[in-house]
Length: 362
Image 1 (cartoon, one colour):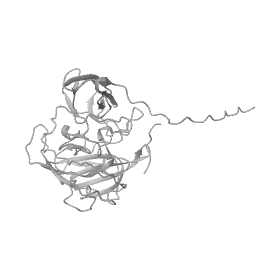
Image 2 (cartoon, one colour):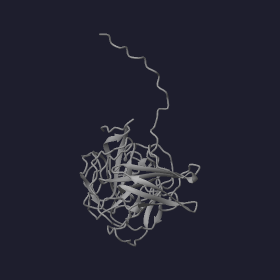
Image 3 (cartoon, helix red, strand yellow):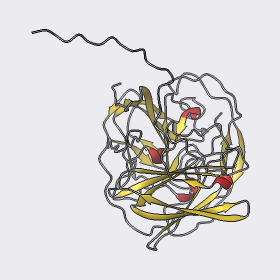
Image 4 (spheres, one colour):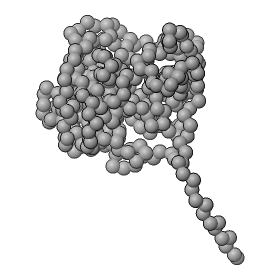
């Protein structure tokens, strides 16, 4: 059944430590404080200011280097954009096209930064302080304050810093969608305000547990909770003529391979990309259709070699990236690769035969 747009995270949370805005160099900095939440499958609510999350405890992490800038990018496809039936490019980017507005390579969704229990629940986009942050879609502001992680309004010790949450006027498969924008220097909206796509909702900062200015961006569904985040790179529109790669890496038993470094190399030469499979389960969720544990967005259309190490051997396959679409592959141990898209969901029952409609007589 084709999706429709309609009207009105166990969190293991890593706070988004990225360096400053010099995206072409590694900057040494003090370790970043992050927060980890004990796994506790509790009932959650739709609003951030109703039920607080459990109190977290802390770890310290080093700060990685930023992804180097090697090219500029075309404008995004208009939203909503979905060529394939189960794709959902519903959101624009929170940073304008005249700025660097793609995720920092070391801070993608599902990344692990300390042990196996700290995973990243969004993507980080580095930008200079006070760069405008824009609403990724139309909706109502349900949080515009300090305290979003602990769900305590005004708490200036909160690791998210100043943050905004938007409940969108549309959903996916009859489920509500939210987006989160954290570490702002200042906010430009108030709770209850309705915003349109592209409206300025705040300005880039480094409030909360972070070592440099950036925006931490999340997509949540159907609840505004850390337990319900999904990979934003499957939700934000790619540049025109570019596509997205999603994959599911498993061993022969079907167990997911965690934190495998995958190299993505264009056939015609040029920039190589690396991406890691998701970390431990709990605070990250796979897309209901792709069931992926790896996503790499913003790839120019073309043929790419996918390679990584499995049981001390290099394995590889080739995948074609199509403009404006998600390309998909799976790997299952010694069974190897498959580049077929997931099968279309089918009914789990057989409909009863309906009586034939009588033919009207003249």
